[in-house]
Structures are given as C-alpha cells and as structure tokens.
Length: 345
Picture 1 (cartoon, one colour):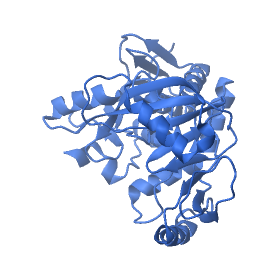
Picture 2: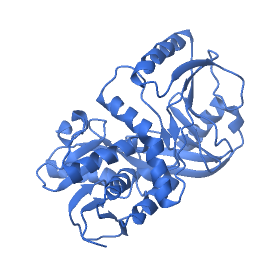
Picture 3: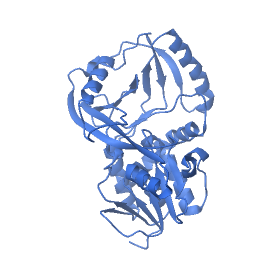
Picture 4: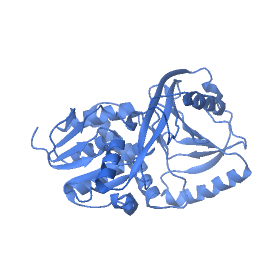
C-alpha cells in the first residue's frame, strides 16, 4: 500500500471503527492486531445498543445519544462498502415496571426524553399486551423506547474489516511496523500499558459472560429485565447477557451462565427449551472514569488512545470513530472533557 498515514493498534470495535472513519476521509490506514479480529471483549454476542436513562443529563449521555442517532447511516455506509451485513437494526427495547412508583417515574422520564432526544425517538409507558415476546411485568406496564438498537458483533467486525479493505486499508494479523500517527485501541492490555507508562492505574478489566440461544425473533424488540439484556439478532439467535465480575479464577465461561439462562426464561417464558448455541466470556476494558478514554497519549507525540468502551463500545463506536478521525487527521478536538485521558489522572 502507499505510505501509511494512520496506524491503529487493535482490531476490536473502537480500533476498526476509527480505522474506517479515517479511511473514508482518504487516509491510508494500517490496522495491527496481534491476536485476532475481535479477540477481546468486542468478540462477544450481546450487541445491545441502548441509551442511558433520559434524566440527569450530562456530556456522556449526550455523546451516546448522538452516536445512537447516527448509527443507522453509519452502519449503512459500512455495509455498502463491504457488501456484508452488520446485523444492525433499530428494533427498540421493552422493560418491565415493578409497581406504580416505577410507572410514575417512567412517565416522568418520558417527558424528559421528549426534549432531550430531540423528537427523534420516544420513551413511553405502554400496557402489557400478552404477546409472547414480552417480559413478565408485575405492574402490567412496560417502558418502550424507540432509540435502542442491536448489532451482531461478529458480523459487524467482519463488515468493518471488508469496508476498510475496500478503501485500500490494511489489516495485519501479527506484528508490523507503525507509521504515521498511531491510535492505541487495545482494550485491557492497552489500559495496563497506559497505567504503567503514566505511573497510575487508569483502568482495569471486568469479566463478562453471555450466551446465545437458537430462537427466531429477529424483528422483535430487545428486552432489559433486572439488569439482564435479552437481544434478538438478525441470524435467528437471541443473546442473553451479561455478568460483571471484578474477581474471577479463569477467563472462560463458567456456571454463572446457567443462572443467566434461568433468569432469561423466567423473564420471557417462550425461551424455555431454546438450544444454547454459544457461551462466551471475555474481559472488558473499564476506564477509571467509567467513560470512554479518548485523546492524545500524554507525553508521547503522535500517539493517541481510544479505549474503555466498557459495555457501551458498539453503541459509542460511530461517534468515537468520527471524533478520533477529526483529531488525528484534522487536529479538531471535540472530545468531551470527561472522556479525555487526563480525566483519569
């Protein structure tokens, strides 16, 4: 390829998205991945793209809103360039409400969403209809939001790789020379390397586990029940996840997944007897700020960080990618203060 303008280390969702955004603007891009595409937490199965609660508004929630609103067009462009499906679909989300107090709180949030979401999506309280694909709700009411979407991580990463290559980008599995500016998007190992370089812990890994069931509901809304994501996907599976573990004895799946399955069936009884087709475990990068960590690597000219997409990496990816491309290609810095690497120091 021609001389490289941007080297991206890491072929997870942040790394590939930043590479794609740069390539779309005409940069020559090389991605270096030493393990495998989606080898870290981006290789999971859940793919829930969901907004924060529309209240106590802050820059993180505003950034995520912009990313979710731009996602359909952004993934359409990836699919057009690659010729591959990403599994993206803005299918909405349902959440059960426990009692009258929860119903009233949800209605207040709906009023907030009417303004904060700029009329481009709704958060509303709706009655249970008795449909098979509804979560059990003690109050008889549900929250429905029309902003939530889903994406199939494996398909999305494959589409990004193909889209990048269609623009002349290079994806290297193994080591390769760095050239141009360098963006480090290497997940948990990247947080560890940055912590060592800065002499302060700037983040850590949190293990997550999830499973995938064979059940056809690809046009249905995703569900969120007592912290559990239940996400129908475009390939005829339903993902269930995930755990958050700060202490563990091994990195692979374990018996906790049986508990997730039991909770999913209790919430949505039609899943009873569905075949388990995949069990996944991975360690997700969580920055000390709990927000994505973006910007220049302090004291290291020409090096940048895109990390810490803990649980919300796929939802944040379109906006993260464009903001990082602004920074590394054009010198325009639109990173929210709370996302900056310096915010963790």
